[in-house]
Image 1: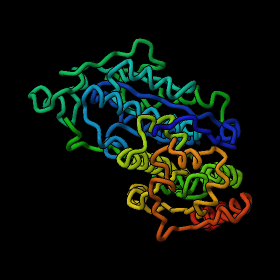
Image 2: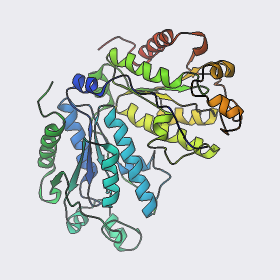
Image 3: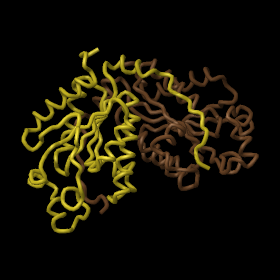
Image 4: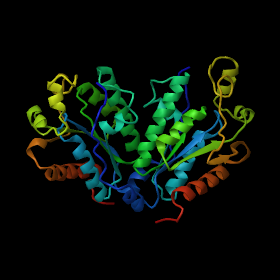
Length: 201
Length: 201
């Protein structure tokens, strides 16, 4: 039997009350970019900045999810789709709980990112970490690009798997050309403008 | 390629700082019980009570997840296991974000609940909604027990699928013998004793 005709019992706490109490809306900042474009560094850095600024916030990346919720998934096209689908469902639930959710996933396929936007709803913002493949490879401390070039890693985004450059991201950050602190300054300002435009409540 | 040898970039915000600011720990209240034992009513009712008491809190139930994160799953033994696995991973992430997470799932198999406890860690509390099959059937407004008896629903917990009664739940509530308001009073007191034992911060 599959779910059919189910009655859904709803939340009794209005979204507006959650938001009023915490002084900001919930929502999702969805970071996309090549391997070593800075996603994990920046999502956890931004989480700390927003926490200091008084936000209810939480960051997670692909590495974290692949050790838990998505540990059954690999890197086939279908598994990548499911990886992003579950990540976006998780983000949507957490945003509904009031958090500013910051996610770091390569999310190479534009169609998967578009589905994530639909899942997460109005307060979703795509953040593109714009760094060239050469720049990412040059600072890849984990040696993944080299391993992919050697054929030890297959299906590696940027080498032998595609990355769809975002056509109309909500925010673009040239991470290869900017110090981390400056990236975080810009991201913090962007987040505040989206989730707490009228200042602390 | 599967995840191998990945470097995990960690949160910069210490758990203790989240807890100090919000005045309580994060954690999970895992409700288990037969269909129509009161799970969804009580998880959303408790969410409202704890929100009023100043907690960061969020409730979700099986119905909600089967419309989103778990919409690809049915009711086979394996799908039920995966349903609970993903629910517990979601609860664990949200609890790590600081929330008191309240979940409502039949979760009929003791082994699946034991895995959920491991996934969620120290601040996990199993809440057993103890109502007899007859009492649940009598108040099943959705007619599911009747449909299961007629054979229209197969694999229905309590009729033709098993329910492992919890052997050592952290809290037991006789939901068939108690008004909803009294249930919520007891649950609220239990939650406060576990997550904010020293009073508001």
